[in-house]
Image (cartoon, rainbow, N blue to C red; front, side, top):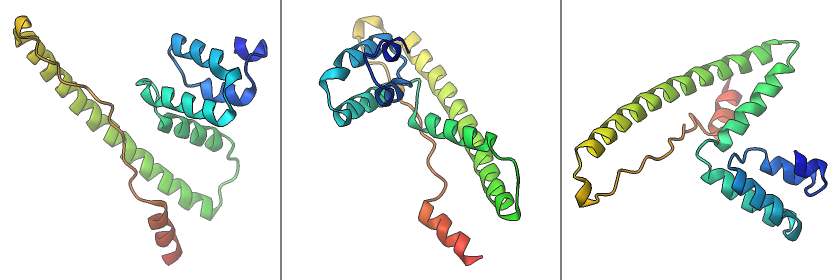
Amino acid sequence: MRALEDGRIDIARAQYLAPVQDEEELSSLIEQAPTLSMTEFAQLAKSVVINNSAYSIDDGRLADVDRKLAKIRVITVVGLAHLDRILARVLELQSQAQSDTNVLSASQSADHEVEKSADPRTNRARPRRGKTAVPPAETRSHRRAATHKS
């Protein structure tokens, strides 16, 4: 925010920087901003965000949905059908996240046991812990086809 207020970056670049959590990365991006085209800066900022384990692009998508749902004032029959699909997807995502958390917890416990039992002199590599993504339940074209059949 200070860089935006000081005029070191514009609002478009600030939006790309919003999800960046690492202060060093953030400072580096702000420093590079004036020398890069908007496209180059966007690509660079996106690559930093993708490598940032505390943030997922889907987090931004969920924030967008949250903001849009907060604006809803009137529900029609069509809107109710959309809400039913949204609710079903929310429940599916929550279930997936809970099972991923359980799997991740079990995996971390197993990794911890391996680390405790490993001989430090062997210098064995520790298992890598990756980020799990929630796959989409269906494609847009599938949803469109299902919607047009009814």
